[in-house]
Length: 523
Image (cartoon, rainbow, N blue to C red; front, side, top):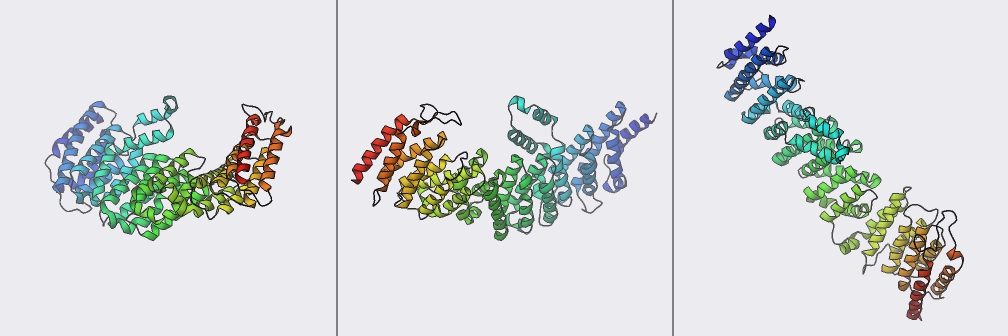
């Protein structure tokens, strides 16, 4: 009959505690909460029903005692009840206990004075942030398991998960307790947040910690400066291992807001490290930080504009669609008009693109060639100081075996002849490079050389010894010869076909026409 004792004790306590003062309840208060949690999980249904009455009475009594206030020492109602709710209530596997703890905690957070929350704020905030992941609805796990079937990708699912967590009762409590952060508890709260940001478990916890920090930053502004260095470092600490875009966006947004109120030297150091990684690896996650700086901290972005904008121009041609989209957004946010960008940054852009041409990765080489091509196209009317350097490097990059995207080098070289009007040996070397590619077996190179020759010849100037005219005669002779019409035996492609290969029957009359016009112009 022990269950009758538990049932009777629960009913009795529900009546006894009503109207009691804190002094009379203090010796038993912590144990009453612990026993309440136990009987809520009792094996006997009638005991659990009685326990619900006890829990309701204890909930109202707790709220009354906390609202009455009094000395805020280690024996105050808030100091006793908060640790119990946070360590034994919310974390309990029993749904009734978890629900009761959330209700009591929500009432305390919503209606209690700020001074009741300040003392226990580091523990409250830490526990609530960890609960964002542990209290996630089981529906999210179901959706995750069937995401492929309903057409939801991981990025969209993570964003949905974060939004759902922020809209929950725990998210609401975090928004409320953020107003209780002050200079006295800032150091403890920031330490807890830094730990969760660097090593928190779960998408919701890490993204929630960043969002909570954003709320603090927007409210405290320059008062948060003493702890900014630690938080800036935490936000960029694990980016190399972070693959969750939703978390990265939350970190980047908070980083941008925090950078406005931090020491300039600390911020500049972090931004420089981000740019170094981006330049070396082209990371999407690091790039998002730069985009958020452009959107939310334009003053900080302006200090690094001479370094960021040339990088943005180059990164717009990255082979990764996600990286490319981020840097196109950066350029749209802060980039000047195309002609202005070329005039101011053409040397820096050229340097970045030439470095890319030296890479061992084909995608990086292709991005460098595309960057040079766009740079030259936007330079109409502007003489590039580095045009000869660009031309020589493009010619060097054409040497060697074929790699995917090599034809872009020919396109860029052709644009140099058209918009920068190279003279002397350079234009002759470029035309000869086109001619050499015309002899290749690779159809894409032949097509690119064909197009480059027809577009560039009208802008080429004749040399003192008629070298250009002689070279054009050679090209015409080759195209009309049997070698210009032979089949690629290695790949089975027909170089003079009209579908997949080089259409020499169209190239010959087109070349004859531009050559005739060119000779008339230089006669």
